[in-house]
Length: 201
Ligand SMILES: [Fe+2]
Image (tube, rainbow, N blue to C red; front, side, top):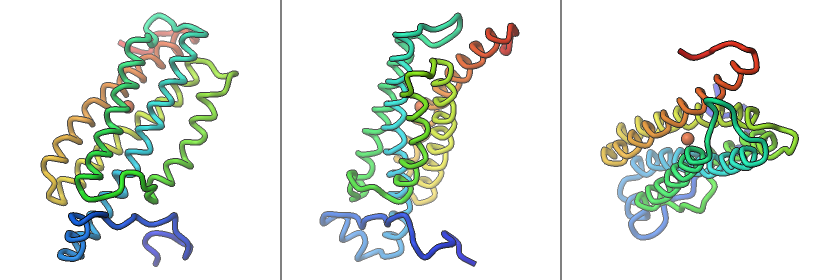
């Protein structure tokens, strides 16, 4: 049974850590190096997704400016705030990759998969025919993924002995939980208004 793929082809590989620090780490601790590669792959995925998230919020801001919001819907200040937090998370991931001796510019397999998977989200968000509520539908997918992604990353970092990284990822996960709650609330209010019902307490 194949564990990772049914094909002999794979979506790239995680580049080996670079620099003296990274090279020594791999040479002295080969198994450790392999485990770090798994972490670097997941960090690559987070970097790709967080950068995408910031661009999705840019699309939401554009829709807001053109079409406006609704009672209980998103406002500019909060959308801009979340966009800034997504970018800060991207910077955090890059910093972590480099602290582990990785290459923050490399596209890891998980990052590559994420890039392909998010194309549909961008198509919806930047389509001139879609409205703000439809962009929120896309943001809900993004935020659900963000929450699960940071949770996974925090657990992995902790199990691999990176306690301080795990703590930073847990803080990030809590921030993402607020994003998710806001997006869900805005979407529920919008859908509820359309249907003439109240979906939230
Ligand atoms: Fe988020």
